[in-house]
Length: 107
Length: 407
Ligand code: HEM
Image 1 (cartoon, rainbow over the protein chains, first blue to last red):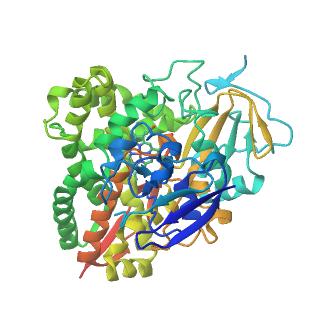
Image 2: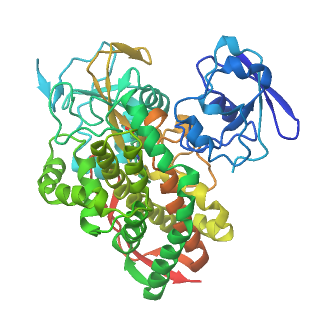
Image 3: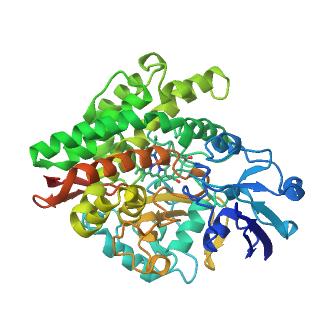
């Protein structure tokens, strides 16, 4: 299990344990994290699981997936260099302690 | 090698229950809920001797198989034929029936053209068409809803969105049904579909040619990707055709099934009228409850295991998406239609890298149709028995006599 902390737009922090191999979007939904919608279920067809990877983690999370950039253009909030679709972040032990920030809205 | 339905016949691994059933028999397709319940009761996987395939219908395993494109590939066909051993009836789809890295390239082009932002400009035209059609039906009172609403709406808006100049309702709708029937065994539905090929396919091919499309539609975006060198001209033409095979009959079915759900559950329709913002979640529940695409297959590309059972390379696995969507272990009370259920994770659009690339467009169509109904129609009532139309992969109505009572 790997610890991931979500920081909502209002500053609320929630830390959950995610099974390795799962993705951040699915884990967020399973743990009722507000601020992640995940409408398409992880097929990279929407941008409602948009998150900002904390600066300290940006390199370790790795680059965007092929096609992710295009889909981010549909995000409701500003896209920053640290923007990711959380369905494309696969949890591995090296990501223990990962921090992601959630945008104000997803739709 | 002993072949059956175009794939290698095999003996199931120890412990896998054997069930002597024909999932594609007309009476099974027409009463599929019983088949799904029995399928789930048998276990995570069953062996079906008639076609020498495995079938799965529980949520967890269906999801596992459908979303693992490494072990369970699409390039060997998502129907019963294994493309490794025979030539399919048409050249394989370059998005549906391929694996990465080929898939990644075409998927990117399609996903960009169908992203929420890319299609948001279609909203006004869709709403206008929905209002016009629904107004006509309210004035009429009684009508046959498959032809007059479920088909009429997509056939009005979709070819136009694509930029098509030519239109032919029958061929547009039948093309999808034909392609989906072809995924099944060599039964009467598949044979009837194959008999339609010479009439439908040349028409579709001609109507999707670059010079038959306007410059401002979704089709032009795909041909634009050919200009940019992302795909070849021939690939672009194939992708444009896939809009029609995958995007017309499926949304026709989605609308018909939504009307059937709301006519069957008047209290839920009252809730939609009271809060039209429920239109979007309502469609998600329609998708879960009726699964317009009921079954697609995968092929094991290596020896592997699911739920502890051995699966040999070359095994065809029927994934009953509709059954996963009705699995009590996942949904608690799957037989209740509840428009605010918000069934996140349903399998009606598939899952993983092949998950429906047209889902935003389908959602937009349905959101608009359902909101317009909620504004204009007080009651949706049956005006005769609904009749379902058996298809090897689609769960659609054939006839739906309805009455709209005006607000
Ligand atoms: C209610 C409507 C719809 C339903 C239920 C539906 C269902 C599905 C399903 C289950 C898949 C996954 C197939 C697989 O994994 O093997 C799929 C893929 C696909 N759908 Fe849809 N679909 C719908 C509407 C549309 C529309 C409107 C379009 C086009 C604009 C479309 C185009 C496609 C394409 C091209 C694929 C292949 C994607 C890939 O393999 O990457 N669909 N659809």
